[in-house]
Image (cartoon, rainbow, N blue to C red; front, side, top):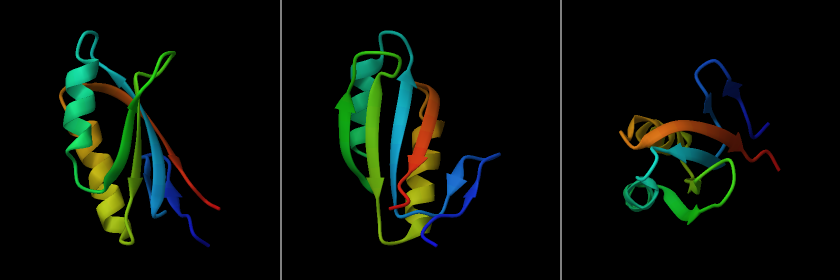
Length: 88
């Protein structure tokens, strides 16, 4: 299996994940630029709608994916995240 998740902590063992991000109001561009600089974040886009930003996190090492997810969540301009690990 390519995916194992602990949904209570939102940490998964997939090597690719899409992360939907709600940023602090007025801090969307700053948050985008900060997330873009994180290791293993391959792509970042600003969105219109319920979420402000989507980040694509990828690595051949699951620990690096999990660390990137933790770094995104710990960003002071990130209010909430929704992580969608890719399973196929």
